[in-house]
Length: 391
Length: 132
Ligand SMILES: [Zn+2]
Image 1 (cartoon, rainbow over the protein chains, first blue to last red):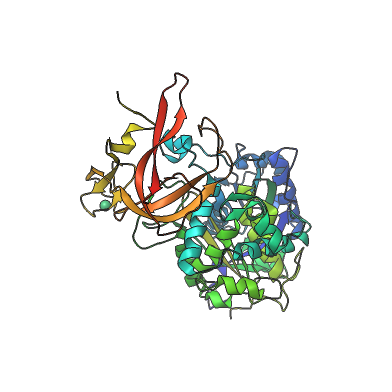
Image 2: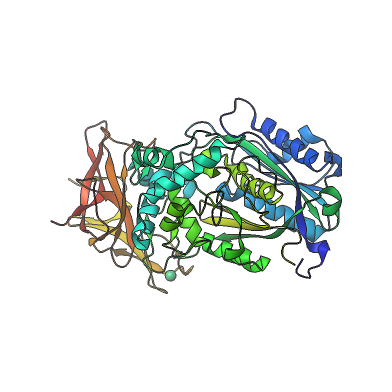
């Protein structure tokens, strides 16, 4: 507990998650399923919930989940922050519990994206129409341009990208809720269709459907609801500063490179009083294989430039130094934008509690980390601690 | 007769071709396309500037599939996109005439055909070509 007042500590006490993949139905059906599972996971009902936060990137209104769950009069806040929605929802719930002295909150994230749903319009991002008309408003080419430069600067072999994909689908193939459950070899990943050099078909995640809900509880209430509450030791959100390299950027600054992920990770570690080398299981935004390599460096979980050796060593596999994206990450789960960040937290919660649905990290891991990142240059990171680990 | 452009505000001139950015009076930062304020220092005292026309490839990729609308083309062929380091600013644009590049390779600005309008006029954008 690091001597902190337990009344100001927030814990994750329950979780629920739907299968990820294509879904032929209403996105709020998925949200309801995840919420009911999360409530059942810690043995409470909707009537016991004081406060809720929900996020989606779609058109439905999360706060209208009360129509399905029950009109108890609770305050329900909606957030919408792209890929970082889950992290922002979690932060909002944590802050609400502490600031308002409430005891129990539910956080839910969901989406049901159609195939190819990530097409973006220049106007929505404040860019001229020419940018789309000339074929540059493409998320996948941004990922490729970013990792091409990073691998060059850090002297990392492009073949490392194949190892990232192989690892993701290895984890995914063992996870009952993952969308992609077929293993892919390093060679298969490297030799499949080139989409945007150096990234091939097996190196991108796709939009899909899914929902995740978590129950948070403050102070002593957490220990009444859960045998193994996971302390939310930190959740920090940061935006971009000059020098960051974001999607849909017609220009970049030639000065020092910055990143909201670097800032959010550092803030989260500082707030938790934990250093990156203490982390035993992690989730990193891997919308493409290159992103995971970059984010290992930006979060401080690996020294920049050493990722190539790390993947060759199996460092990020289940028996490695630091298992990463143990449910297969976005590569194997796809990205229902509103749910994705909470999927990460759900997976780390289960790993720390020793009840992983797929491959379980051995030797009772006690410290976990999650990282989301997305347009227009925001990142949210959490540090999760199995209680008693940091005393 | 003037040349048709995807967006005339991108260009300081077309003969010789030069891109138009803006420079901040407070911190000196240059951005592209020209903006009415400076995202680097949040200053609002900015003026337009013609950007350098030669630089080096900072990063590159290939566009192997036809992007969705609003992308326009007469006939799709895979093409290259890159960021070019012009010294004062790094600009994203097409990399012309080939699809294999090396980071650090010298390039210069050029006009490139983007698509043909229904009335037959050819619309141009900018790109960078290898300096041979
Ligand atoms: Zn400035």
